[in-house]
Amino acid sequence: MYIDPETGLLDSARHVPSANADARPDANDISLIVIHSISLPPGEFGAESRWIERFFCNDLPADAHPYFVEICALKVSAHVLIMRTGEIIQFVPFHRRAWHAGVSCYQGRERCNDFSIGIELEGTDDSAFEPVQYQSLAALIIALRKCYPRIGDHIAGHSDIAPGRKTDPGRGFDWALLQRLLKQSTQNQSVRL
Image (cartoon, rainbow, N blue to C red; front, side, top):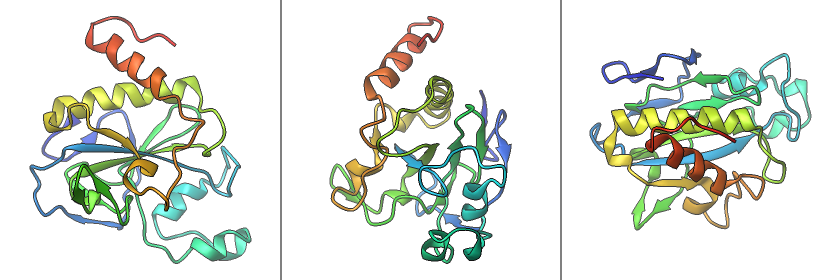
């Protein structure tokens, strides 16, 4: 995977631009990755209609599902979404600010959207994620660290930066597996599950 530092785009992603983004206060301060989980409708995966894409692009029809009435007017996005298949969809160039974290704080710094990259995983707080999602996530994090070295080991869950308000990626997310995959890759080993 390669990120073009000029465009902020990932070469291996499918690009679906979202309007829910703006300029960062400091374009050189990209120093955190925030991991989220999402499914639309809640608990359903792989919908043919790509509800998550439509949600991030302000095109979620309120009448398609009762839950959509509650969220269809929200203006949110993430930089990328990793589907259950491992496919990566990019909504916002990494050098721009995506609207994913909301009211948040990381190591004493508020407004995490200003300096973070938001990665959504298709899933729920209490279900396991797919092995291929971890592989895609680890490869993406490696590419992000190369392009934005200030990230280093600064990786947090949405629940870590917005405790009491958010619970994702939840107990179904295997942090130890992610760390093992990242460690293997830095040791120039093949990434194994």
